Amino acid sequence: VIGIWFTALGISTMAFNLNGFNFNQSIIDSQGHVINTWADVLNRANLGFEVMHERNAHNFPLDLAAAEATPVALTAPVING
Image (cartoon, rainbow, N blue to C red; front, side, top):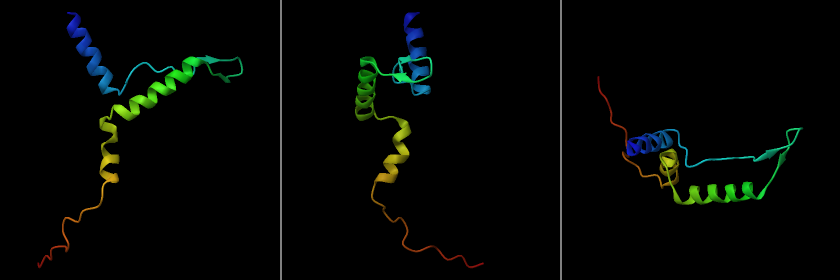
């Protein structure tokens, strides 16, 4: 039963691209300004490591755009109708 719950948790995590818990701003003062803590610094560092090491499906179009352009057809076909 526990395996089923962990499988469901893993599938929903990947479906929503949640690579872990993300607390962007830990502490906010009464005016809404962010008070940075060491937890925020560590969180940013961890997110940077995840971006470098865990490629995901959302980077797929960027991989296509980063490659050299290779021509598939040098001339367009002529249609006589």
